[in-house]
Length: 194
Image (cartoon, rainbow, N blue to C red):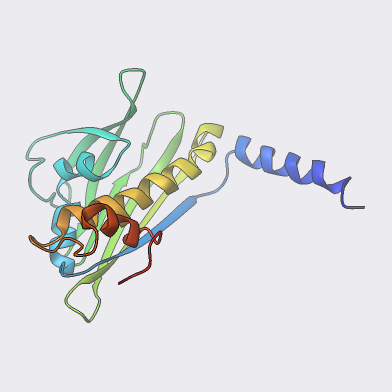
């Protein structure tokens, strides 16, 4: 009698999307061949780089956005679908090191999410590159924050697994067997490694 339980499962899924949950935590990892942890963190802690690699990020406002933020410095990130749905979050750098960067937004996105955080950690991979982890977290205040999880997961994956490696790739290191598109497909796991 599996059929009678299926509506309950669907109802639970729908209710989980509609009701605010405890903290949402999304973790994305990637490898960055020939990129030191310091270089990765320097790039990621420079706010003007965010719209370059994050599809949902449209602009960053603040002073000195073209250099890594220091602890206590803040910027406003515009994302979403401006001008139809312009969303804004104020991020403050709360911790920075050679291989770590943490950005917090206690107020988050008004009425949608609060206590937002981006926590980056880069480690040496033993082969001259680095392994990077982003732990993004927030406390949902509305169903929109829960419904956004699949889109945020995809946005983070595209940023860290495709666009960041392409942006930080050393000059002259394109994929010899197929060019940049093949390199992106290999990084996404769509093609086998050479």
